[in-house]
Image (cartoon, rainbow, N blue to C red; front, side, top):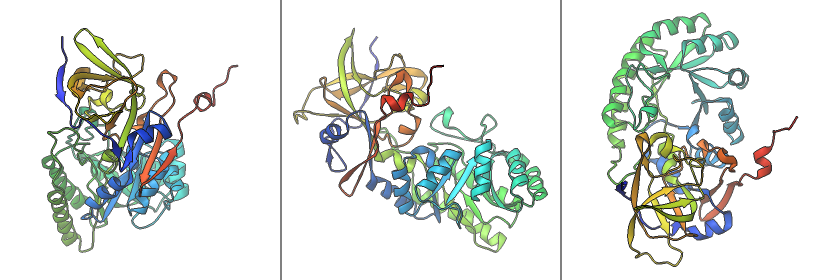
Length: 423
């Protein structure tokens, strides 16, 4: 049976940020992630209506990307001890106002708890137990509470972070209990945070404003900051609509002003984008290594697989794809193509939808040795990479002001087996 066909958002690409894709592949090999610094700068500037742009580091945590974001004036949200150490290595200070680094999680492992205490990292507690564990070691400090408002929404069930089936955040009916725990250890709850999911829409995001106001009223005038969380959608498909950022910021500014009137002091308004800042900046450059027919289906098989970009197999995520014509011919016939990778897994397909349904893309004819660019791959691309099938992690390159910088060399076999021993 022929796969369902989905029209591609783009067909041909010869450059990334003004640099020829063929030159990038020649210099750095494939598969390679390439990031456009100018796009990251633009996306940070989009959010100027918020007092603080706090980047969710988990989206793309390369040190050079973190350094760029720091230079653009954004601070970071971390979810592990490793991410805290990355932020420090990229030049962020451990403490300040607003906190340059915030640790947001639902638990403390031993290393993250010790590091937060030692480095005076501001903690955003996602469970009542975190309050007690932190308070015993760091009494008297300020904390933020991440609240699950009882509802959630996202582009996938796996990215929905609110509601009773989500593990994230403190349940909205446990706030009084959490305030008592904080008081027991002289912890001051000075901030609130709500994030209901990645890729949600303006209607659901606006509902968080009301929930935030109600929660802040319950906590009281000690609140000095509120965070709208993240979840700002990225345009992947031709049919995707960009969020109305002006409307979104206006909703949150109105909520913030009401709280300032109620508390009679300023309240800082933060937003916490991850994917929104880096997704569109990233491109996965791969080589077509086989063109094959399976009955009436045509496959382009690349040297990149879900070990490099896991979003399609995890979420059924759509990514725009482009062919890089080796002979400059951009007037080729198109055909229905299934795009897959090299892994020994039937699920190693980039053109699939939720539930593993294989679909085809309408793409130009291509031949072995030509390049394909998988676009909007700058968020949850490299950071979700693995060594499955003992394949090395890809290289990463940053293009800034016309210069190409290798910001992570390709993993070698020696890197791959480092730490392994035969007894």
